[in-house]
Image 1: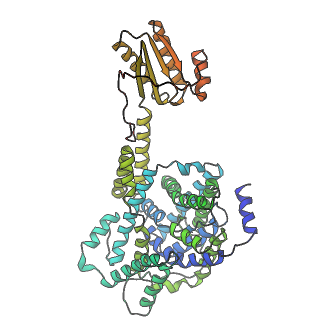
Image 2: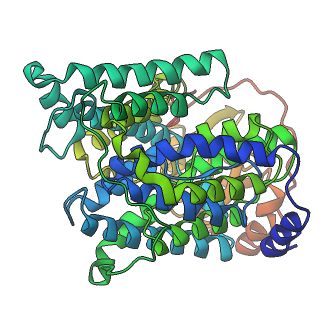
Length: 534
């Protein structure tokens, strides 16, 4: 069944019990979050609401997860801010136009990946890179909100520098704004401890809004939020499309990790299949819709998806209900104009705190030192490159590839002697990158022992053998036989048997279980592999 027919079939059945309540519950959280994440992304706050409407409704039309809630999210907002900062001034309509165009790029990439059935790329991003980037991004997200929390103006582009600048000027702090922001954080985090479904974002926002609108507190507020439905995007800077391709690709892939993780997790818990191709299409449509209706790149939200599921959602109707509920309040959103900016800062900080963790680095250090040294530069680079945080991802990907090549270019060789025979067992992958190392090592070992008359090459522990590897084996056989040494190939794996037969011209023996032999290691080549294990 195609994604489209599956989607239509589900919607023809109508919403399940609980979808309406869950959708409305999420909408109450989404409205204030949309304003907060829009400011994090660098767009005027109302564009967060446009994204919340368009992306959430579009994602509800197709996708593999009945719980995934799409819309403005912190990580994608930070990526958007970093990508567009060099092109336009944050907070302006020009910046918002760039953000809408970027959403179209992200949406196009994701739809193409889904239609071409390349959803497998969702599994290809190195986990240490993603974890390190996520932790660094969370720190940057929190740092970016510190000036707003203290109500201190700063001009620094790097969030860490801006946070340091704000903190280092205590005379400029607005104590009332700080109290509002801290109260928001306490209500959200405390509410989670009381109940996972406690609408902390809504409660804290309404309290802050009520105090501000009544004039009981005087703090910086969001400002004018125009009423009205999301408008079609106009005046997009198409001439700058080329400069948005790389950031769009990064956001399309890195930003997809979050919704992919959510969908996979809940699919496993429900014992249902997860279709990454279909999810790519759904997330792509969400971003195309956001870009079309003056929004900015969207992603999947862990917190809202969890709230959606715990509130009783059972189908993607809950996402449609959420989007329609936000759409219904758009004619009246000007009432949020008195919402304190410090409350929005508190919302973002509370959401990002859960992403700050040392466990990914501890596990990398414990299980794979090379991967730790991929994660650490990714983390540091993301912080240093901010606001161009996508460069941290590219650094991590480059390091991951380097580690992979380093490991693949190394050939592990077990060697031992029985009577007059030298036994050689290469392990891992014998391909064009590692195969040239085999013959010189065997020749060196033979030169060290004049009493050896045979060489037995065991292939039972080779995971893969390519044509170059087979040609190197043939060269070894020919050179050794030319010098009067017998060479025997044993233990060929079934997947390599045809290639070995074709290249060497003989039928190799099938793999057999070798008896334990007393071993005399001529050359201990038991190096630690790149994961630090023996």
